[in-house]
Amino acid sequence: MANTLLTVDKITPRGLASLHDEVNFVKSVNREYDDQFAQSGLKIGSNLRIRKPQQPVVNTGKTAVVQDDIEQFLNLTFDVNVDQLNTTFQFGSAEMSLDLDMFADRVLDPASKIIASKMEQKEINNCIKGVDNLVVSSSSLTSLDVLRANSFMTEQTCPTSERFFMVNPTDEVDYINANSNLFNAADSIAEQYKDAFVGRANGNTWMRSNRIDTITNGGTVSGTLSATTVEGGNTLVLAGLSNAQVIPAGTVITVAAVNGVQVETKNNVGRLRQMSVLETVTATSGGAATVTVNPLFASATDGRKNVDALPQNGAAFTIAGAADTTYRQSLAYNKNAFTIASADLELPQGGAKGARSVMEGISMRINKGWNILGDDDITRMDVFTTSAVLRPEYASKIWVPVT
Image (cartoon, rainbow, N blue to C red; front, side):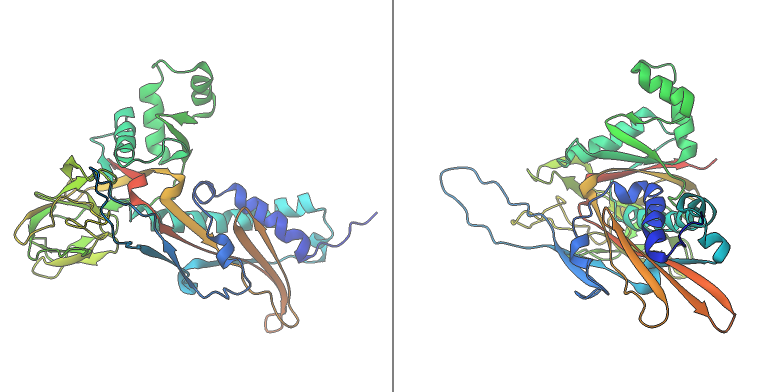
């Protein structure tokens, strides 16, 4: 008996299921803001202001001190030129008569995996550039590197539950090889031996990914500031770099005499505050550059304080890592370090056929229509996602040099 012909409303949920299986990072972070975009055609607009958690100051003594209610926001913004991903594929009556599993194997799964890979790459690299905490490995990934990354998060009161480690596959292999003879649970050792996969270690659930971009330092990794950063400012004015040196997004900079503070007690943590560059910048021919970082507060009494002093004109700065060196990146994080949202796309009006499906906050649309110019039956798959860093202190990145 012939199968019922497959239609877009039947294949869309299956295509989304295939995509969903491929996106480890997207599934492991906060997605509570999806519902606010889950209205046809982004009817709330392409931008959502998210209120960040307050950090009130604790006072001592009998007398209460009234604090100003200072609200901090970040923007979760959709850019159609960046965030809408699509791929196309063709199938005819022969494929339409297949059962759904066979059709998925031939058509849907390959298309879903390609678009899932691109979405995962886009969101990981968008988030990692906003992470300030950094551990630079000397040669290969070690347990100490991961533990240090975790300690930076714990230092800032990050919950120990729902922690993940997105590891570069090359570094995971080195880690497994170096730790194969250590005392571990038998089932964990068996999993590493049989599947070459860590699973869970050092307080994190491990997931491998080859979608995190490498990062490369320029020829100069130190210099001086040529301006003082103001309270609440988010720029560092660098001098002494190489001619036209590129400072890529995700570069981490420290400034002399600017230490970090603990997010709740506001006590000096005893180490320089790490600041991640949020957008790629190219220095001038004279080696000057202005980079954007997360806002810095030194004297705020409303809980926003995150450094013990502001960067001063003439202070020495250092770029993490070695000059002219490329690093692989891995990322440790708590679920609430980042948020990812997926918006519903409009269904076609007119002759085309379309369907939309949502699974755990990820929305997919599949449209099918006839191209009269090319005499082709075209099917198009779309997803529309964006991401933002909610709490950068809840994440740490690890760099391992490429040799």
